[in-house]
Length: 334
Ligand SMILES: NC(=O)c1ccc[n+]([C@@H]2O[C@H](COP(=O)([O-])OP(=O)(O)OC[C@H]3O[C@@H](n4cnc5c(N)ncnc54)[C@H](O)[C@@H]3O)[C@@H](O)[C@H]2O)c1
Image (cartoon, rainbow, N blue to C red):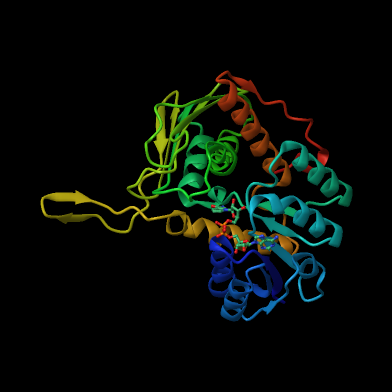
């Protein structure tokens, strides 16, 4: 039996999730779509064979919906995730889980009281073949202990409403999550350093975010959302006996007009297509009774807590500490 998915938010990410669920994820179908932009909702519903349900809370409660994907704006994640928990329905919530660590803890309390893991967070990099290969290489042991994790996250251009704070709370959360996952460690201190700002975009862009991890490694993440030339994510892990890094995930290398090189996508969708598809496939397997997959609500909380410390550092110029609450038993296993 196919899992009937209700999709909330039919924008860039929602449209992409619907396309994967309809074309390349097995065992699932889009049963219903909700978006205040009814034209978008109708377009995505028609493209995937689902119904339009105007109110997202009605969609969550609808008998035709077994499980929910939340791809609406960040401030909607908390109330909609809580509504999924109240209905006892599994939910794949786009990152971030919520916009404050206190809100994340409320969601964690609500999930813990159901006694089961119903929430997966859309930190899709955990399914990217490159990051998976990096983690495998580190786990093999030959590289020795991890020392430095260099990360680069560049967007071609940022939306007009992007702020200096969004670079940390909305964009860098991907780096926070992948660093925690790759290093199997937590961040204990965060320092944000801003060089002279690019004249494009009118905000503190780029930023460098330093994380001191509890086991002693350091993560440096360059976040640059008006880099102009394309979407580019890089990572190199420096260890005691060598390094492991992502290679550019391109199909071709072009030699032409006395130059040699490869293209960069305009945004994240082509770069992480395999990760988005595999994330959804793993989620569907867990909805069908398999073990929990991907990032948990706890991981969502940890990423938002690091972002909060980052925002404090951005405001003060000083290093800020990350003070995580004790991890509830529900989240002790991966
Ligand atoms: N995992 C990733 O790589 C990734 C990438 C981009 C965005 N995101 C996240 O996905 C979410 C959506 O981002 P996007 O780029 O698709 O934004 P978007 O603006 O393209 O789409 C958001 C959609 O949600 C709709 N919406 C607004 N309020 C709503 C509500 N209350 N209920 C239902 N729908 C509502 C809007 O009308 C719009 O169609 C954000 O939380 C963002 O942080 C994740």
